[in-house]
Every structure is written in structure tokens, then in C-alpha cells.
Image (cartoon, rainbow over all chains, first blue to last red; front, side, top):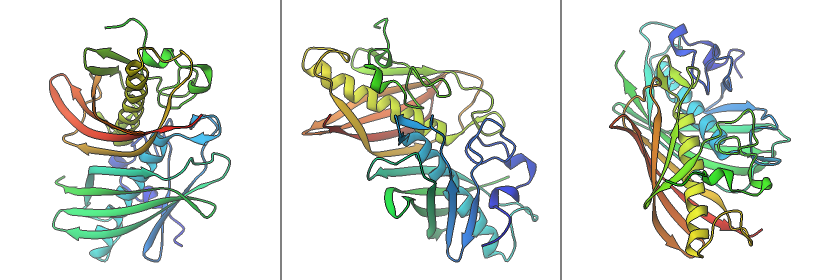
Length: 151
Length: 151
């Protein structure tokens, strides 16, 4: 595993997202790291990130899944050119669509582990699949379609 | 339009959700109201609910869409029995799946208006469709499948 998270490589303009921006003080500040072909985000929810007491809010799960997949897509696009986010010219993506299937209530008292993989790269579109695990239980699974945008 | 939001009718157990709970002080505290066959949620984002400066975070959009659709489904189920949320016995739903398509960047300087409709009720499953408008522009559209759960 690399020492530096994908989110810590972005040039400043890309660091204010509520879900993943390192400079958004009110945000979730998720961190994503490659582990082989898998991109992994481990995140510790707070008690108030609930749907009802002690179970995780679906919107927070969707937010992390969305941001983690987008970071995965953008990082993979840079890597396909043999370089990292933060090198010139920047490659940026937006989320075109997001799908999440909630498989079971998600506990709040343990870290949430999101495991993402590139499913397909086709022209400007990258499809990323991702699942959320708590301990060994898969609590949610989903997919994003990320679209390369002009800067 | 009714005076009382759906979220203000829930018994206390249902009031802690980060997206829609009236008793979650750190949450978004959205409010949903019926206007004829449409259920409407108007919400004013803060500057930090961004993806990048001045544009809305997809995760926040997904969260509101999810919670607003779930409240719509639960309220409709009570109404189908000629009563309101808060009357006995309670009817509860969970989100089974969430789909959001992002159509254009969403401005942060105007209210977000989510318009939801019941698309289908089939056994324990209610499908709700919803779009996000800013002024007259549709910025996102999506759908949830909500599942009636035993209490």
C-alpha cells in the first residue's frame, strides 16, 4: 500500500469536495489507497452518521462510494499514462451516474471498508464497481459511471 | 401544501437519520411536503456542500434524494390506509437500492428543489422517482426502491 492517499495528491482546485476534499473542514475527508488492482477506503463513521440509532445512513454510504469510485477512476486514468495525480496535465472526472444496493443494515461501531475496482474503460467513460464491508460482511454494493471532463 | 413536514410526524425512533431526522443536529434535516401527487423537498445548500467551489456535491444530492424518496414511500403507505405517519401501527421502509443520474453541475447559490412521485407499489416494494431542479433546470434525476420492513 502506498503511503499517500489519492486525495492528498490533487492540485488545490480538487480539494474542496464535501465527500473527499482534504481542505473541506466540514466534509468526510475520505482517503483512498491502491492495494494491487483494488482501491481501498477505510472510514470510521461517527455516531450521528446514522439512519436510525447504531445503523449507518444510506446517504453517507452513497457519498463515500461515489467519491471513492471517482478518485479510483481518476487515479487509474493517470496511471494508464504512467504518472500520478498532481502531475501535468491534470485529468478530471465527474460522476455521470451512481447506483447503490443496500444489502443489510450497516453497523456504526466498526470501520467501513470500501473496495473498488475498475470494471470498464470505454472512451471518456470509466465504470467502477465498489462494495462496502464491515468486518467480513458485505453491507452495500454499487457502481458509478465516471465521465472524463475537459478542464 | 400541508403545514407539517413528513419528517415532523415520525415517532421519535425515526428522527435521528443524518439525512432527514429532525433530531440529528449534525444532519441535513430535510423537510418533505405533498403538493398533490408530488412530494416536494426544498433545501438550501451551504457553501461547503460542494464538489468543487460553487457546485453541489453528488453525495449530498444522493443523500437528499434517498431520504426524500423514503419519506415519500412511507407517507404514501400510511395514506393508502387513510392515515398519517405518527398514527398506530407505524409502517417503516428501508432503501433497497438508489440510482442517481447527474445531468449537469448543480449550483449552490439557489435552493434545491426535489420533486418525487410514487412510480410503483408492488407487495413490499415501492419505487419512487425523483428529480432535482434548480430554478427551472433539472440537474439530477433518480429512483429508489424502498422495502417495507417489519418492526
